[in-house]
Image 1: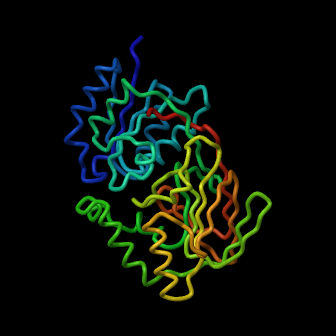
Image 2 (image 1 turned 180 degrees about the vertical axis):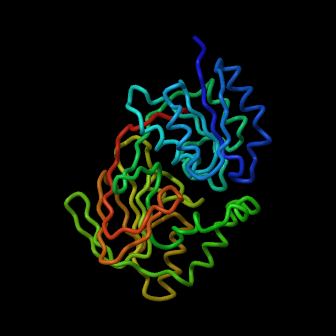
Image 3 (image 1 turned 135 degrees about the vertical axis):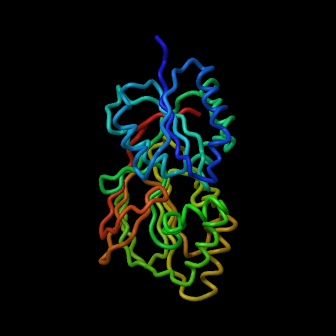
Length: 296
C-alpha cells in the first residue's frame, strides 16, 4: 500500500524561499515512495486547522515555515492519540529557525527534505504552559515581543537582522518584573528583566549558555533568569555575558527542571515559540516527555 505524506508550507515565511525549492522537495518525497498532498497556508492558524482535520489520513506530516508554523503543526499532532500521531519532517523556512538550529536541520530546503530517505524518527519533549503547548521556548521580559512585533515584510527583507534592529529599539523600554519562581522545592523572588524556559540551544538567533546545552528528550527544561541591573555598568555586564555565552555574573540564574511556576502581582506578557502567549499573573510550566517524533 502506497504511503501518504501531507506537505504544508507557509508561502511567505522567511524570504519566501520555499517557492525556489518546491520542485526539489516534492521530487524527494515522491522518490521516497510517498503519495504527496500539498497545502499552502492561507492565514495564521490555517496550518493548524488543516493538519488537525486531515492528520489521520497520512503516514507522515512535513511542514515548511518558521517556528510559528512548527508550533501550529505540533499542536495539531497533539490533537490525536499516540497511536495515530505520525512523525514530523520539518523544513526550516523562517528568518531565524531557532529549533531547527538545535536539531542541526539544514537550512537548505532541498537537503532538509532529503532526510525523508536517510533520517530516522527521534522522540522530542514538549512544553505545556497553562494548558498551552510550546515546542522550544516560553519567555518573558526583554526582547521577547520582538519576534511577533516585527512585521513579516521587515523579516522577509532583512532576515535575522530585522530582529536585531527591533531588539535594539526595545533596550530603552526594558522594565523589570517582580517574580516568585518555584521549582524543585526551591523559591526565588527577585526583579527580573528576562526569564526563559527552553528546550533549545538557540533563542532569537543567539546561542544559550555553553554549559546549558539541551537534549530534546531528557525530560528537562533549561531555565535562564536575568536579574535587573541597577545601572549602566550592570547592563554592560549582562550584554557581555550574552555575547560570550558564559552566564557567570551575579545577574544570571541558570538551572534545569521538569516543572516550574512563575508568580507575579502584575500580569506579565509571555511569548511561546516566538508568538504572543498571553498575559498571566501565574504561569505553570510542565514538560511532556517524548510527546512527538521528528525525523532527524
